[in-house]
Picture (tube, rainbow, N blue to C red):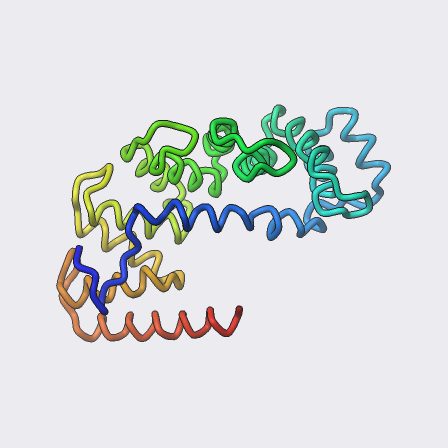
Length: 239
């Protein structure tokens, strides 16, 4: 697709970089919110974890990662996450995947990351589904398969993930892993734009301007360009 001032569509080849940057912040942002898993008495959590309670194992891993009531220890955090993950806890499975993806508390191992992301993804974990979509697209821990990439982005997109909606839309726009379909592309990119993604807002503006997959409308094109500008300004202020 043409990339001009109307259409700023992230090339799929750049998604790997975007994914790498986003996933590296997952633990710091999510797991540091330890209160979400903080049930109170540490000794009780430790006891329940040792007795095999998966939710307590998840909480103990979180406490060890964030240093909440215990010394920070990534290696032990991973050990407790793995225990919960082996019991089928999808959140723990996703976190184990992130640890292996980033080399946190262990050696970096993309194949192991893929294994645990896939387990979590199959249990419906949205972030894991998005991660699997990316890994199939980039050949990270698994052979490249654009068809599988699109399939997993669709799963995450259908759960409302704006990033996956945008990437899936781009794949339909470019015919990567799916038949080229501007109408389907516009549908998903518009969903992402409505959630505030600047790249999606700019892209859908270009599609409205050109009548590409959607009814041509200068008014809609101008509206989405303005929204993109406003969103970019808001993001800059928030940084």
